Amino acid sequence: MADTTDRLALPYILADQAQKHVTHNDGLVRLDALVHLAVLDRDRTEPPAAPSAGDRHIVAAEASGEWAGRGGTVAVWQDGVWMFLEPQAGWRAWCIADEALLVHDGDGWAPAMLGPTDFAGGALSRLGVNTAADDFNRVAIKTSALLVSHDDASGSGNGSVLGTFNKEDAGKDAGFNFQSGWSTRALMGLYGDEDFRIKVSPDGAAFHDALAIDRTTGRVSFPKTGSIGAIASGLFHKADAGSVAFARTGSGTLELKAGSYVEVAGFVHGFAAPTSVQMPALAAGTDYAVYVCSDGTVRADAGLVAPAGFTAADSRKIGGFHYAAGGNAPGYNAGGDTTPQINPYSLWDLKWRPACADPRGMALVAGRFWCDVYLTGVDAGLYGSSRSGVAVATGAAPPKIPVAFGGDGTATYGSFTWYEAVELLASVGKGLLDYDDYVVAAFGTTEAATRGNNPFTTGLGTTNAGSTNSDQKFTSIWGIIQSSGCYYTWGKGFGGSYTTGWSENSEGRGQMVSQPSALLLGANYADGARGGSRTAAWNNPPWTSVGFFASRGRCEHLAHL
Image (tube, one colour):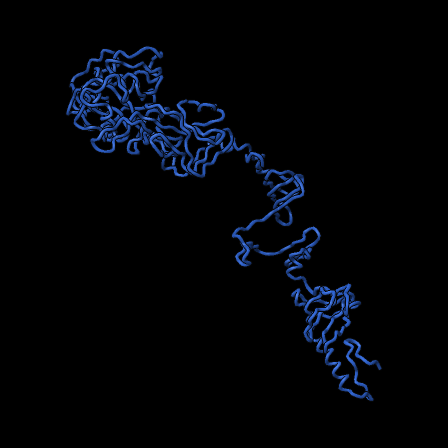
């Protein structure tokens, strides 16, 4: 019979043995060392200088001193000496220093399971959740949902959560693969090059590029649909369809409102924040167009086709404004001033504008209709019907006949009657103001007053100053200049009764019977206290032509909501 047990080498008490208690105590010592085995560490190559009773260590390889040749054994400090226990396959020991459970495999000690340090060190080569991982799919998960949140648990999180996909080189792939029945239907990422793409497939074999984003320029293309220019051609979007796209930020400054998107030369420019309009040197009494250019800038320019330095091919007109020679009336019976500034009611864009073709020289009145800022000039075909500093069309200075009504670009009317005013304004897509239009459009002008003498020209820079009142006194709150007290202007309506018989019309273009009188608005320059925002006369037939009868155009408001 052997002297010790087979597994733990505990000493047997023999039948004729003396001092049996010694043998018994030796067995207890070994049991005390082995049961619930926990070692302090496993990397020492020499004994500690001051061990405590019962301390246990796994001796590291190449140990020296009292531990020489004891690598891999369990060293126990017992009764002032080192006792060494030879481990066998299957022994387990808790390593306090490593905070890990160790197991002996017959050759050496190894962690019974991977711990945090092992995971952090890359010891795990595969991970499967509800399914098996393999050498290609090293992480495999079957789940109905996958949650990844920012780190608010470890104390080292920064509040963000980011996923990184890094491929070996440009020719490889990095992206997402979306499948149905294990057959790919869509890909998203960097596939075969370094441009971001979205691909789709009907069968998992043939793939079509649905979207591609150039990594260098950021330009978006739709290879199977067409260019962004074809798709977004003409795109003009603003965040608030119920207002103009611009905001006046100063007397001579504007900005394009945030949330605007404009297609230019096949590329859509987005403006997430308010963007200043780059201004030229502004000239009083001038209309300016606002352009978005291919370089993403927003510029104002008096040019009708493109801003300086650009062409119609690399810029796009999206709106405009009038830079007036004076400010609007601040309120009732106040009149304007002579400080040049952008008329805030003249701002227009592609979806907020007058219904006529040419929006220059107009202001939006009470959000209802657009009114010419200036009295009608003598050459509407060249300048439009509303321009500063041109001769006013009157019976004394008849305008050119519009081409649409038989003109040749040179010939003028022989008079300026109601009929001719209607023709002239119709040629530019406008009409005459009705009485209710006039009352609103002229509000803010100096009441019970007129200019005193003939202004002859439009705007505030007239050829002669008003002998009684200056022109700016007749600017309305909407910025309508010379809105009253300068000339009577033909109106749309008729009223009263001028004659009960057939009228004689020397032009031979039809006669009127029992016709009412044509409406005249606003008083002439010599009417004194009769002038004002409600002045009207119904005492002249429509064929009247005198030197103080003029006109002013209006048209409807177009707002694409």
